[in-house]
Length: 251
Image (cartoon, rainbow, N blue to C red; front, side, top):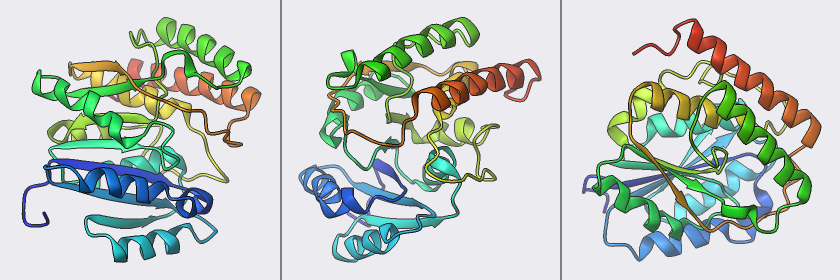
């Protein structure tokens, strides 16, 4: 596998993920990928975790071929995903959450879209089964705002399960303005605007992006704070719009 061109790269951002790693999240990723006929790699991108996340990930990597760890400074999920995407070598590059809220096997629903000529495919959490009511209300309000401010046509921009053709990854992630490799963060940063900026740039570039329903399970994260995150999400929407007016996403 190591000598063949990589077909699928899986980028997994990690910040304080000791619980998910110890409960077997990476084992589930390994089990699925080991059964596939195509070549693959997994990049676990540690976001400067202050706990044993990176050490546990390294221990896993030492025992499982095809996995590697990138130790990055703490910049929040957005900057961490960007670092992994730009380091990936796959023909298709997917980023997915460590908690496997969307199981990796759901990539089977995305891959056929690339054969059909799409440049990117994003997962959509239909109904958000199991999510608290407050998160569903937040999602509905955010959907209305992004349609008005950014004119993004997608039902769910925030699902952490997105794949892009490797050839377009530098074009998208190299143009990021709000979230980039220079970003820094404090604490567990939930960056709603990251996905918006990715999709806005892809649309600006004229890339074909499909939206496909995927399985999703609420994991009960404590990193979402309704009022603060809604406010930051609105600010990010406006920042993307301002950057667009200023021509910072020009092709």
